Length: 113
Image 1 (cartoon, rainbow, N blue to C red):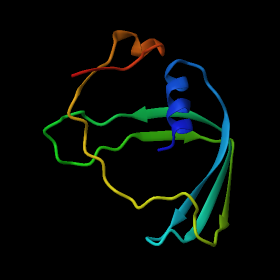
Image 2 (image 1 turned 90 degrees about the horizontal axis):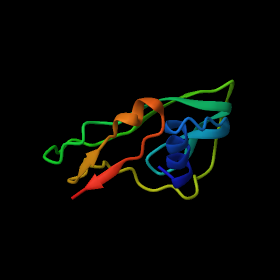
Image 3 (image 1 turned 180 degrees about the vertical axis):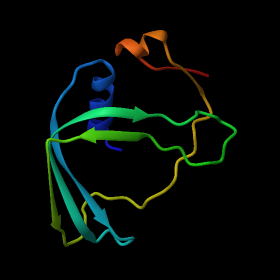
Image 4 (image 1 turned 90 degrees about the vertical axis):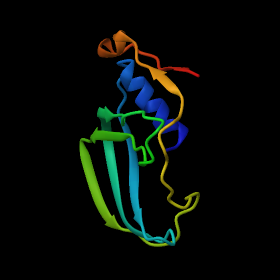
């Protein structure tokens, strides 16, 4: 994920709710665009962080659920610029601490080695 998306997630955890617009482009394995979904005035309503188990060999994915006001679907074409080959990520081998204030939306993640 790009840094602006991580910043948007961090802001939502701090209750700095922002509405954003953007696009999700579905591509084939050659990065040729197939379909495009434009969303408008979306807010992050849920983030799910996987179990951070350093011994696990399973890929780690962060799930982000958006709630947009409007969605527009269109056929897309052409090669997507800036894309990278899809690869799976393994969970980090370091330990993460979630403070009790996460429920209040003012949490910061800290990493201990």
